[in-house]
Figure (cartoon, one colour):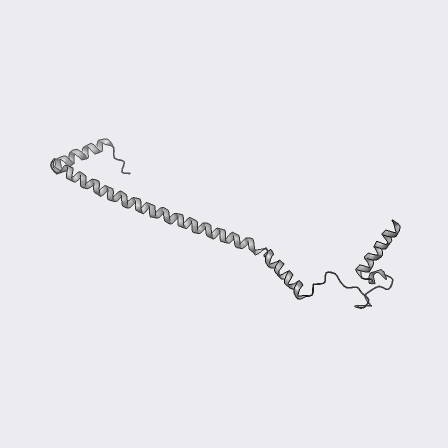
Length: 139
């Protein structure tokens, strides 16, 4: 920390022995040791609190990143359980379904349906049964 070598320590010890005297030197060294212990404990406590604050900040940052990732992951997708619940509720209540194809029956628009194509005017189920009859008769 202070980069003091053995030579400097010997010189400091000789000056302290001359300035303080041999009688008071052990008391002064003991007091100096106690003060150094207090300083080290305070530095250790400060370092521990600083490291704990850094860990809490990292945990808070990781939690924020996780929450952001969870929000972005939920943004594009619907909840499958909620979707299934709504579909079941619509089925029970008898909600009308959305039409999947355009209606080309003659009752809806006789002007738009061509007169030369009578098969286009048939419902899809009738067309399937006619096709099934042809296959079963040919086989």
